[in-house]
Length: 280
Image (tube, rainbow, N blue to C red; front, side, top):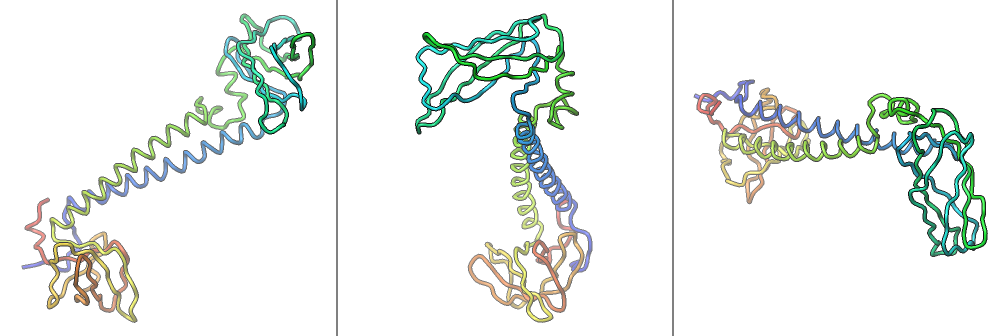
């Protein structure tokens, strides 16, 4: 005898559904948190004050700027002066990139504060020197810290201040987690669909109101539905919704009419396989 009004789906189907939903929720959460991390990284740079840098002794930091239009350099060098002169700054790398569109040349420098250095506020003056001439290119305030924790506490990044993780690193890690859980979600959907078919259920992929009835659209690749039969319809959680007749059956897809009920995509058409015959 068939249990057409049971509110209990086989245990494996219910477990797979919960696992699938958990993977989907984890992927969405990772995407959402990754977007927040990206916005945190953008806001950190966007709201950063000009001509100011928080630096750590013995850790390289970068500064960039532009030169007056039509400035031509052949062998550029960067000269630095730090006030007060209680410590030194080394230039690890310096380059000037000419604009291809006639704009201002851009310069980029990688600098390093030589330890030991006392924490505090310093004024860094930069001068561009070339063959036979020199030109000041800007001043930068350096807030020097002697520990990473002290540096992170002054960061404009919420994530870096409270978690000690760079927002870009956090965004990349969360993106990897989103891809991982997304892949698991795809696999769990396939396992769930296979388990439904094995235990005598067809999943409804689309519904359409037809007066007081509801048309159910589902895939039937093995053509197991019979025109002359009436089939029980269950919600995704196993709640009995009513019975449906086959309106159209052809090819890989079919349409059933559910009487006097409203159903949503994701509900199930029971093929009449006894629940006690299904595997747990």
